Length: 525
Image (tube, rainbow, N blue to C red):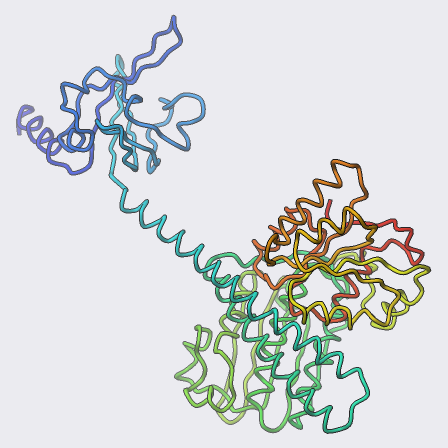
């Protein structure tokens, strides 16, 4: 094969390839310390995209037409010490000055006397459009879910809170049964909402884990109290065995660990008619830095043909299970993701009519527990009852039911509550009042809680006023919404429905001592 035939062959490829090709000569002016990137040749595709003929481009600097991101922003536009740079994204300008998004690969050729670059570009307009469309759809989905979360959680907060207050009052046996019924129903609804929000966060890669110190014994006490009650309702025996080798002070995400346990134990109780449900927790025999947890039941079991799909979304053992036992079919999919997100693993063994064992491992990270935040209800109650002067609290919420609920929870304590129904009223009351703490709803008419918080922080800064703790009391449960509240200047965040314990503990956290001077300590900034 002759050299001329080779040249013709390669030129044919150069001219017919659909990608845009630019051959560039790299020239450096040592005296001026400048480098030029002169175009020597282009292929027809490059001419078609730019709208310029080869004669109009040859001799010009490619930087007049191409803007590159990423690596090419730093130092030299292209570093000859690198053999190539692939998949850089940039913008190619055509004759009308319109921008065409491109993916760029650059190859370097050095024949000893000259350095040449070959730019290979692909039009990625369709990819950019698809990416923007996906982002828009994702934003729309997140906004929809955030709004649905708010609309569902706001009335749910009133239902759950009212049920809790009623349970603490003097009721007859029949009334207690009715209250327990709608409390349980509202909790089931809350669980369903949480499952839907969690699976949406997982799909959007927005689910984040905390890494905080917590007491493992307190966590398991919460699990035991709630799960043993559910087991007793069905006449099942329930037990938890914890190895004494496990440290009480751990580091991780206690809320998500509790969610995993609630889900697995709740499933075992739900699918067990007779017998027992047991939990065993130990340090993994082969991985000393991992906990090994087993949840075993004597329930209906899982058919072997369903094993492969058990952890998929909206999946249960068979169609009749949903009708007979209820549930969204999301729980195990969420559990699997949480465990794997923690760096762990989950599996199971099951036999129809005999029972099921779910087992999982998660990282075991002992820590020195430093939190002094009280968890016992009587301790928190005693704290408020010992205040030497009334606590001045501003309650900001446009929903009457939520304001009524907060007032009902706090009415037994020496707390004077001032109310505001929107952000404008809240800002004015802060400017003219002397509050120790503010409970701030986020989604309100006229001025929302985010804007109101920013206005309050600006006023405090301008007039060197004391920084008032502002707790966002909102139905928004997404991580980005929580971050938005904190970035606006909120000191803390509580998601509705909020329990009496959570509300009291959050308020208590911001008060330095029982004499309330008002000297306050802040959770953030």
